[in-house]
Structure formats: C-alpha cells, structure tokens
Image 1 (cartoon, rainbow over the protein chains, first blue to last red):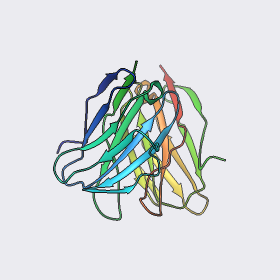
Image 2: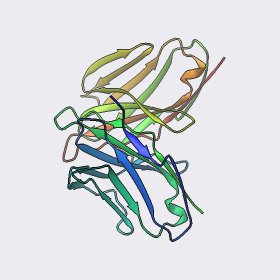
Image 3: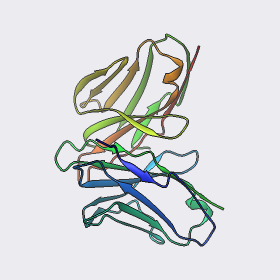
Length: 114
Length: 110
C-alpha cells in the first residue's frame, strides 16, 4: 500500500512563473490537507479538500494560490506568479473519511523561487 | 499566546538517556499527533492519540485531556533519534485541521 506521494520533490521557479505541486493520497483516502513550512518556521495549515470540494481554505493566501482535488487524479496546489517569499516546503497529508482522521504525510515538495 | 507550546525548544543529550518532550495546547481537540521531521525534511507520523498512553518500540506518548498536556518520551535514546519532534493537536471543530507546535530539536550525541 503506497504512502502519500508528492511530486516533484524539488521545484525551482523564477519570479513570475507558475508552480504546480501534486499530491496523490493513499489508496482509499478521500481527504487531503496541504501545509506549508517556511524556512526556519513551523508548519502551517493551508487548505483542506475532499474530492471535488474545498472544505476549509482559511490558511491560503488570498491571492495567487489555489487548490483542487478532482474526481480523478491527484490534488494540485497551484501558485501563480511566484515570489521569493513562496520558497518553502509544501507538505500534503491524506486521511480516510470518518471520525478517526489520522493524517499520513507525504515527503513534501521543496519550492525554490530564484 | 501560541495555541501550542512545546518545551524544550532544543535538547541535547547523550546516547542512552531518557528523553521527555512536553506539549501544552489551548484548543479543543479530537486527537493529538506527534510528528518526527528528520534533517532531510520528511515528516513521519509517530503517534495519534486521544487519551491515555501509546507505546511503539522505544517511544511512548501520553496525553492528559483535562490538563491539555501531552508528553513524548524516548527511552534508551540513540543518535538516530536526532530530529525535530512536532506536537500537532487536531482541532475538534470543523475541518479537524492540525495546529502545530514550533518543534523540539533533539540531538543525541554518541
């Protein structure tokens, strides 16, 4: 049973470009969470999605950031017109539907904006 | 005041020592996670607990819901235990999202 998969593991973008980060949840998991870890800072919640629904996006920056979790395929975190301050590690976690929502983390994508 | 406070922030010990990391939180929770982040950056979930105590190998996690406090213990510590340990309460309300402590950086010297 493969764990949570994220790709790419490392992503380099120049200022103004777009970054697309992918997260494939564990088999049987229909809930995805995205977290960001800025350099020398702790993890922060960004967004929580179920298939085809955004449940809670209270941690997402108001502009340039969007997330989706389509019926088929991975969850995508999209950052438009990246800036140097977007450089961070982005982790996703997945969980089953239900009360005991244990979250399993992916290896993360390290985004570097030049 | 942060919703999650961990102590100590940094801890250096000798191999074999008994390690305790503490976590206090102020939010209402459905569960609490302990996570391990190695220097390479990957995150591993060590425990998810909602009451009492759990043990896995040399690791023990306890939680006191009434006092809003949890501890992570490592027995017979080893240099490979060197990592950042993160306490992450899972909020009871809404999306049950995790809130994170700042982490405890543990270094075990041989």
